[in-house]
Length: 136
Image (cartoon, rainbow, N blue to C red; front, side, top):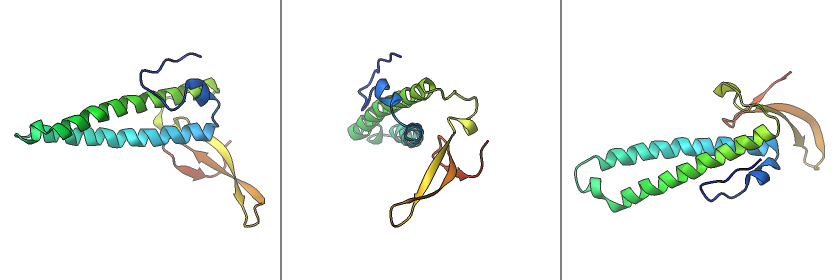
């Protein structure tokens, strides 16, 4: 699989493919949360620049908007790379956000003496939430 990123990224697609599934889904959730907040910030900054001078010509605000656009593009590309890595690992893309890259993983509780106790099943979703239960 070949992928040429437009932005500088901290990892390649090949490196992402070698990450564990929970690591990939947690990073996707983290990036999507960051993108949500960056989008909200961009809206607020653009609203501010629509006001009368000097707010409409504040060079710091205009620079922040430009820098955020680059960050948003880079993070969106990183999410795409991670989703491609999931697809390469055989995780199908789903049609709904509720099921978006949901995975069942086994976590082991560690007692004070460092030994593993019985495993618990948790469901990790792209939103970063964990739900206990039995999944068939």
